[in-house]
Every structure is written in C-alpha cells, then in structure tokens.
Amino acid sequence: MLMKLLTWFRGYLYIRIRGSSPERFINLCCNKQIYLWNLMRKEEEYQFNIYAKQYKELKPIAKKTKMVPCITKKEGMPFLMHKYRKRKGFFAGVLLCCVLIYIMSLYIWDINIEGGYKYTPEAVVKFLHENEVSTGMQKKKIDCQEIEDTIRLSYPDIGWVSAEIKGTRLIIKITETNMPAPAKEAIAPSHMIAAKDGIVKEIITRSGTPMVKDGDIVKKGDILVSGILTVIGDNDILLSKKPVIADADIKCKTYYDYKETFSMNYIEKVDTKESKKGYNITLFGKKIFLYNPRISYPKYDIIVSENALHLTNSFYLPFRFSTVLTKEYTERYKTYSESEANVIAKANLKRYFDRLIEKGVIITENNVKITIKNNYCSTMGRIIVEEAAWEYQTVQEDEWRIDQTDEHNGNNY
Image (tube, rainbow, N blue to C red; front, side, top):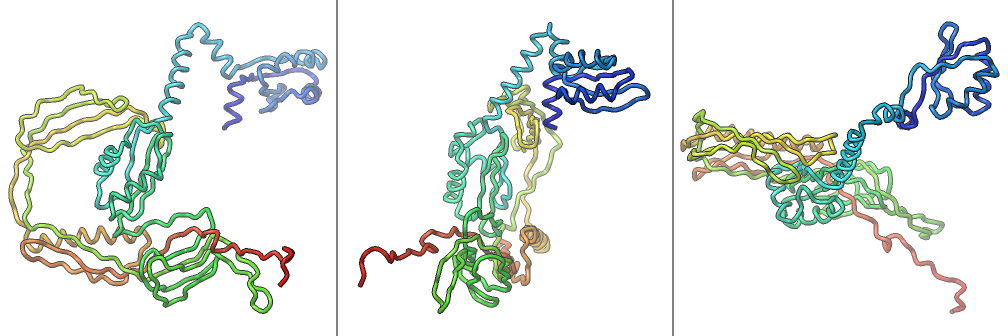
C-alpha cells in the first residue's frame, strides 16, 4: 500500500511498445536501471508501467532497437496538478483541510467510558470535567497515570482503572471492587501475587518459582509465584539469583459479597404522548442551538441523540449534531408486589453473574438470599467462585541482587 502511494506521488505512465526487438529493448532498460513493472505481452505488443521522469531515457533505447513507445495513460499527482493547475483555490483548500485535520489530531475530542457497573459514563465524565479533564484538551497535557490515580483515590469501590489515548479519544476502562479486575501484562520482572484472600485450587508454573501448592490458604498480597530464579551450586551454595516475569496458570477458590437494596415503593412515569424536538450542533466544545423549543411541561424527560463526526473509529472530530427530544409524563405512585420485587432482584443478580462469567469466573456456590422487610427488598449473600485471583508485582532490585565480596581487597583475616 505504501509503495502504491509513493508511486502515485511520483507519477507514472502506461506504455505500449511495438517493433521487432522487444526482448533487446527490455534488456537495455534493465542495463540502464530503468524500472519497468506490470510487463505483459498482448498479441504483437508489450505493455508496461514506468516512472514519468524516466520516460525520456527510453528515447535512445527505442532508436537503437527500432521500437516505438507510445503513452496510453498518465497517472499520479504531477499529472493531476497539471490538469487542475488553473484551480489554485482547490489545492489551497485541500492543503488547508490537511493542516486543520493535523491540528485537530493534537486534541481530545471524545471521552469514552467502558466497564462501569455502578457508575454511569455520564457521572465519570462529569467527575473528569470537575478535575479539569475534558474534550478540547491537548493530548500532551493529559497524564493518563494521574487520571488513573485520581479516580482510584476518589472512588474507593473502583478497584482497577485504565486510561489511554487512541487517536483523538480518551478511553477509560474501570472495574469496581465487587467485580474481578483484568490482569495487566508485565513488561518488567514481576511476582504473581494474590489479589484477594482465597484457597489455591490449581497452579501450573511455566516461569518463576512457585511459592504455594494446591490446597494452600493465601492472603491478599502473598506471593504465589516468585519472579526470582535461584541458581544453587554444590553443597547447596547459592550462586546467583535471576529476575524473570513469573508466568503460571493459577486457579483460586475465592468469594464475592453481593448486596443490593431497593424500596418497594416507586414512581411510575406515564407518557402523555406530548413531545417537542430541538436541534443543536457542537463545534469545538461550544454548543449552538439551531432550534430550541419552549418547554411548558411540569414534568418531562429529555432524550438526547448525538452523532459525532469521525474519520475512523479512533479519530473523532470536534463536530457533533444532536437531536433533543422532550417528552412529557405524569407520575403515579405504586408499590411492588412480592413477586414483582423478586423478579427485579433476580434479574439484577443474573446481570451480576453474567458480568462475572464474562470475566472468566466460575461460580461454584450461590448463597445469596432475597428478603423483603420494612418495605424494602434486600438481596445479599456470598458467592463462592473459582478464578485467577492474582496480579503482578514488580521485582525490586534488592530482592535478587547479591553483593559479591571482594577477595582481593588486601584485607586478610
């Protein structure tokens, strides 16, 4: 693809030759280092492609071999520019467009939140905005590590967070503490440590030194597989230690505590079928209302459908078009029956189980109970699971480096 693009920028020709010595013509072109490609024979003629700048070099060869070259087609940027040489405004516009796209690529125009279960993307985006992270910022001013630390400190129940920049998008992935965090890949020598309390069910080590065995009880932070290999010599003398990235298949028996409570009383929204539509566009973070209807409804929902202009999945532009639908509703106070509350609680629990299974967790025992008391429906209990409950911890230099004694320091005792 890159070669085709470079060839197009240089410009090339489609050539047809006719004569009595085509083989000699081609051999002389090779000797003169004239690059020909797509060479083919068609009846009594030969066809090939050649760079535009090398076409003049064919003249002495054609004269010597009595061949007649003929240009059948011209391709590439030089010919396109010559064709539209009187339309300087068009090329200036194309150049300006390229410059603007490059400038816009230096900024963040979309923030995408993934993985939230309790916290909605809107809540996280609002939190980021309060911490001076928003669309329209220069990418060089965004510190992904600082964003991760800020979210962890502000939300104790978010156990894992990742922030990365792709194109003009800031992508933030979060996992709450009541959900398993995806394991990160290690790039430096590391231990595999327990991410939570549990019992080791199975461990198969490929790299590193196993520190536990099947059936061992481990606490959070215990080293499961050490990232240090020891070299033992004769008489069990320690010769050296070598840091590596620990690698193993580990399955632990652990648990998750589940708790959810909701009121049996609720407000039902009744749609009155009355609605109004508004339209707006957003340019470089500034919202411009094209049509903003006057709302006189006492209670209403606002539904926003937003379409962001983007060149690729990761290259978003600072242009958005939004449709704002305002729907009127009235309120009706109702109370769940016990059967209705049970259905809702079971559906919420099933969604939680599905999220666990998506993370590769095997559910072995479900001790969650649903109770209705004091006009509240409570779902709580412990879920026993089998999972890869480990994470990486970087090996420190003082853990493996051995200070060598100097036998020739002149001090003999």
